[in-house]
Amino acid sequence: MKKMKAALMYGPGDIRYEQVERPCCPEGGFLLKVKAVGLCGSDIRNLLTDSKAGRYPHIYGHEIVGEIVEIDENVTKYQRGQMVYVYPMAHCLRCENCRNGKHECCTEAESYTDLQGGLQSI
Ligand SMILES: [Zn+2]
Ligand SMILES: [Zn+2]
Image (cartoon, rainbow, N blue to C red; front, top):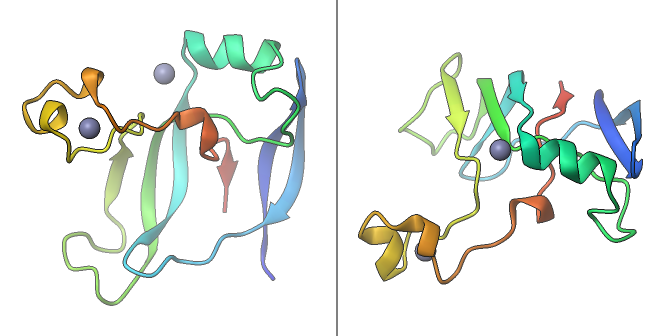
């Protein structure tokens, strides 16, 4: 299995730069080489508190820009080499509120802190 580096959070203020398994290109998706990750106020708060309630290690960083380096052959909307910005929240984009441009009122939103973030690079 290929490896890559990531900033893993093990607890409040305990962030370690370590090797982790490199993900495989998902079916119907693509793999990004992270080029930049924004750190906003919520990241700082999350990194300095027990934000994952003991569920560590976790990779934060939800404001991501990256280059598509691998892409599933069935994906036609994007192409290898393209730079993309990752939508920083986990709104469903299907409910009535999302379809009406009021995604902040999404009824099916997941927490982005449940997803692994962008403080990693292949
Ligand atoms: Zn943010
Ligand atoms: Zn929604």
